[in-house]
Image 1 (cartoon, rainbow, N blue to C red):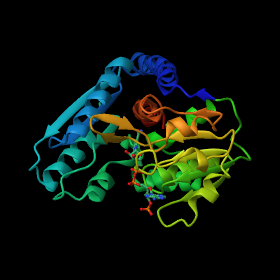
Image 2: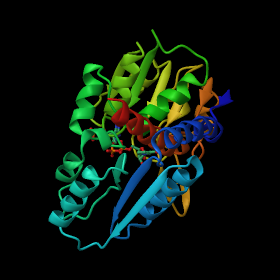
Image 3: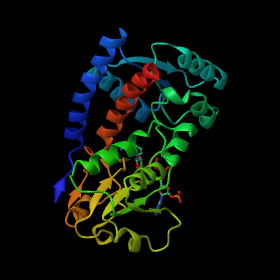
Length: 282
Ligand code: NDP
């Protein structure tokens, strides 16, 4: 069994991005810009936003940070997004989720112009993914594909099973695996006899949100196992995969932490840098 080292793979992608960001600056006389909007003081969001801003610094992307109070109105947030959509030095906009309950998340995400949708959550980008058009891909699924490719194994023709069908992880991950010519099955909470599906997976992606949900008896010998889960319990981070039992069966496995997580932030930067070039070149 080999560990897929998300930190190392992420570092190598970031190295390429440093060069791309520098090329952009040389060519267009300004840095690539990413706006990061946070509302309220959710402790997990604080950590995610801090990591994203540090990653911008590392790669040479300028971050514009907006920390809005919990009680900010939906109208004020929409006005900020309108201003960022129009700003010439902003290439990517990210609104950290979740938002407070008085704000309609769908309405906010829909307001971001698709060209600056760094997270790839806008319906235009989701539709592009579905239709195989050039589009910004959601960061976590895009990172998962990079991690699978890093093994050197071919994806085409493999049985891929994705457990989870959320709009940000499960569904787009399944679409990306399909685009790589895997035969894809999506499982969810209403799937009967889940293990009968997971045991057939050459590539198994667990995006369930339940600590150590996938156990060794659910996994085929030699499978590539990608653990998306980030479940916090008494200050410790656990994946959706029971590493101890699954690592005995898998050929490759991502650890938690240090697997999918670092790639997600890196893909956000990649999306922003690529959007910056696309906007200038189209
Ligand atoms: P959601 O809660 O939105 O979706 C979870 C999915 O799992 C749903 O589709 C749900 O099915 C399915 N599910 C729940 N229980 C079961 C079950 N018993 N059997 C089979 N399927 C089940 O979560 P996300 O997709 O947003 O995130 C999944 C995990 O990934 C979380 O741990 C999250 O923290 C983590 N995550 C990690 C990221 C990273 O960068 N590493 C980024 C984003 C998420 P149904 O649709 O039927 O309810």
